[in-house]
Length: 273
Length: 336
Ligand SMILES: Nc1ncnc2c1ncn2[C@@H]1O[C@H](COP(=O)(O)OP(=O)(O)OP(=O)(O)O)[C@@H](O)[C@H]1O
Ligand SMILES: [Mg+2]
Image (cartoon, rainbow over all chains, first blue to last red; front, side, top):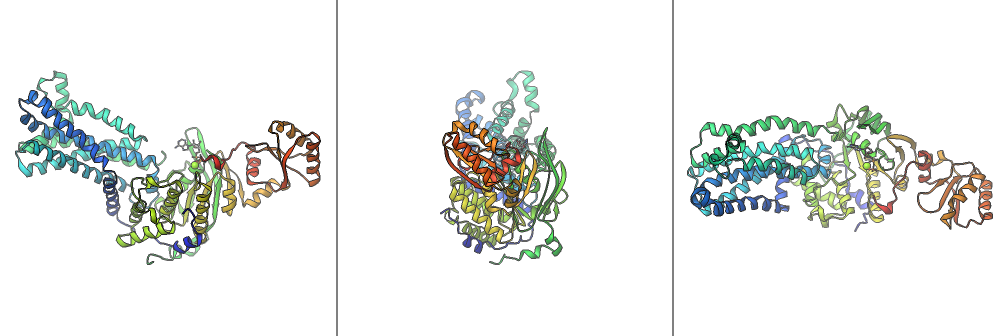
């Protein structure tokens, strides 16, 4: 089986010239296809992804819901948009881990030695992220609907909210791409990511309104980008969001993209790692 | 196969006379350490060229600079006529690199790995699939094509990794330690593959820690140590430079090694080399006469010999002579 006959091999090793160079866009699509293959081969990653939000939804709604909002159904109405934001924000950690794994294994050396658009692998990561956000978001929304959640703004509101979620995910994604480029051990990327994300997510208005919090904490919660995102998503699904809400929610993702996209490029091109 | 095109179309006539790889004074520093410390290299087209050196010699660093994965701190290099610093994209279009550690996506199947790369090169639809299937067949991986790479054995991985470098026939194929960690069978099969590739006109630059590998495969060998090139030539030239008429003795009792060394030193002028394992000594003997006298002296001292022979030095001895014994080369049995 390991015996490779050299005659058979040379007969099959014809000289192959490169075809017409593909476009940057087509390179990016190929990496997107890779992200989809990953879902097929590693479905566990989806399981990880949705289990936590599902548990949170059920626990918070049934354990704390009555106490926090008077009734479980009132709490679910408040909490569900928030858990969508939390899911998307946590999701972003996975592309950082994937990137770190790829870099650790030398897979990117192969990509970097190919004559392709150098940012194509990242575009592929983004495609994977978008898919993950959509799948996880859809699962959580379905569970919410089953439990009695009703988006007042109907389907257009949900679509607008999901569009904003993708933008949020895109912006947050850069943080983990940068971490993935800097840190070679995937689990460290995860730990670093969660250490940074937990305070952001918990000290926000995802779980409770900040009225009962001490003043100093409230001051933080009110400007926490995660709160701004949550308010906007909540507003969009309830049909009460103002343009200002949406713009405030987009502020952090836009800044992150402007700041970290060049950093990503620089880290990646700085080949002397 | 309709994608088969003559490689000669890709190169103009005068380019064909240039060396495939040419480097002048390449330097790469990592902090204080000069991992590659001024290396000149010329690899003629169509040749199998080996870079031989112990762990940490700078082999990988050198290859990565030539493959545009690392920027040199000093010096210059060109590959297939393209400058690695000024035109990295052109270099990438004419090379392929199989790194020291497999650069495959473990979660995907073997076939998907090749398809991914074929599509990145610009093959579409049917032709990408043909390319992947042809390579799988050529490397006898068709049966495992649908399995995830994480289930592959070391030898299968290595083959797939090399196949992944041949989606488009490269002008130069860089192979960083292509057989490290493989069993003798898998090694032989990688060797055959390398020879077949060279026969089809691909220039191959490979690194190895194994002298026999360099000896068996390569038309020329550059020996590097501590970031510097310490010798270059054909395996015959390297051996000749160290001198012929080597006396090798193996002792039955390793405890008497020092004693035997002293006796040999009395009778012969060459530097005595201890083999890294076992009770073996090698020394250059000017003549057979001098050698027989030395043997006689050993016998007179009642040092029992398990074996002795006269011959040209092995590459290993050449290496020890060149590095002054500083380099220890890997033994296959111990793996990495
Ligand atoms: N990214 C890096 N940062 C710091 N030092 C490095 C880096 N890469 C290599 N080195 C150092 O440079 C030297 C040469 O390393 P290199 O990997 O080129 O050796 P090698 O000949 O390939 O060895 P081996 O046979 O073990 O693969 C080593 O001392 C190594 O520790
Ligand atoms: Mg190496």
